[in-house]
Length: 343
Image (cartoon, rainbow, N blue to C red; front, side):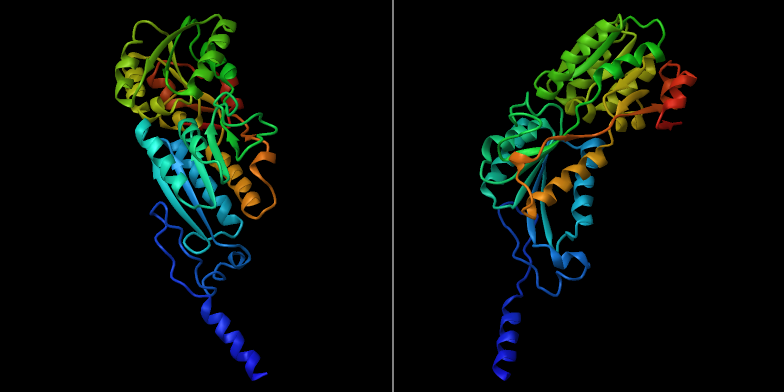
């Protein structure tokens, strides 16, 4: 009996090791002491994991998606710095940094990678083939070459799409700006997700008797000038979920307010910031869905190849103050249907 007790104590003593610095790519922290892994109730039931998070650019929607992802892990019992260690990098919208982040993840030994927004997802998927990659805030994973199909991804990549109802969003323009004929659309011609939405916007504009006027950019610093180029040429502006433009949205809103041109956006956070209207998804909820998929993978219940791409449910979101500033009208019919009205 004494020998058994001493053996048990010896085994317990071998289990403790100091946690490493999770912010450094390529350094997976060792598992925390067993005494720490039980501090949060559920956390004792999960195996410590290391997750790399690559975000293409910083703006409210993408930030919300990352927060939702982490919240889903927390709800499943993964406690940050105890049973889950995040190595998070942001490319700030730069193509070279996006590739660099992806390469650093390829050399790392994380259990799972989260790639946020289409450019980052494409960069990571290109160089990481041996570990699960989850994507979020990606408009069209198939067109972006990330998965074989939405129902059956077929490789090491799956996740969530933020494909927005472009037709319904364009359809808001005649309602908030009666008599509108020409609609400007701002986008980065180098973003695959934006090209998908522009194609849909062209079709939707034609169906609504509108002419689409395109203004393209290659970086955030060009957005203000592109917005200014639409003044006098359009009756309204449509901003899709283009990462480059949304990151510089303040410049578009400033032009719109000065010239009484209403903006319809591709997502809800832009309406909160100062656009007039959208049918948008909840990006925090989208991130939560992605996090739930991560839990399934980390716990060995599913593989990315077999997890269908998931998406959010669009909701009507309006901004009364923005409508007044931009010369738009929010009819009672719209107001009564809105999930959220900012004033």
